[in-house]
Amino acid sequence: MPETSNAPQVAVTGPVPDATLDQLFREARIHNAWLPKPVPVELLRKIYELARFGPTSANSSPARFVFLTTPAAKARLQPALSSGNVEKTMAAPATAIVAWDTEFYEKLPKLFPQSDMRSVFAGKQALIDETAFRNGSLEGGYFILAARALGLDCGPMSGFDQGKVNAEFFPDGKWKANFLCNLGYGDRSKLFPRNPRLDFEEACKVL
Image 1 (cartoon, rainbow, N blue to C red):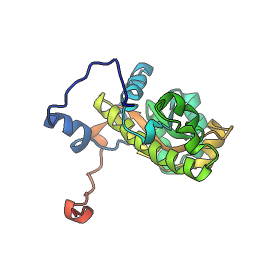
Image 2: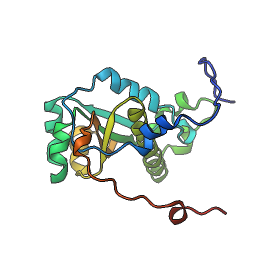
Image 3: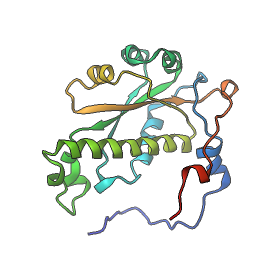
Image 4: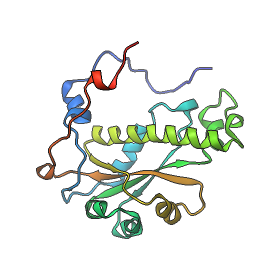
């Protein structure tokens, strides 16, 4: 049974404008310094509501997001950060803990009602972990693009102690941290020169 929606269907007519590609990819940068401009909670909500439409296996949607927006919340995160990530994270208007749900399959009756996908995962820990981490990482990528599309800059990072983050924020063990992402309005005057990227011939094969 195909997915249905009451939303109006919009035809995809072609590539988005170059300016949009610049904002999402070519001119977008990882930011380490931030302007003193807050990120309202309503904007964080809009980021999620956009990112959730990205595809995942069986619409499993295992990513979970915890937004740290206050000094008290950031203080709870600070002991888990590597030394090079402390200053920029404390200065960021918001930081997202991008996590994955070890019990994501419990929501599959709602998310994939056309088939009994819950039984595919229940009791199969290796499959649960592999699926949740892979698809949760995909959703983290959608999240970054959604934030950029809505005018925010991002500072994703993996320099932290996952065990400490899990113990502090997810003590019941049901969610597990994947990566962190600072959010705000970056200070472009403090950007480092952009590092090279691999060319098509170095990274791709056409068979």
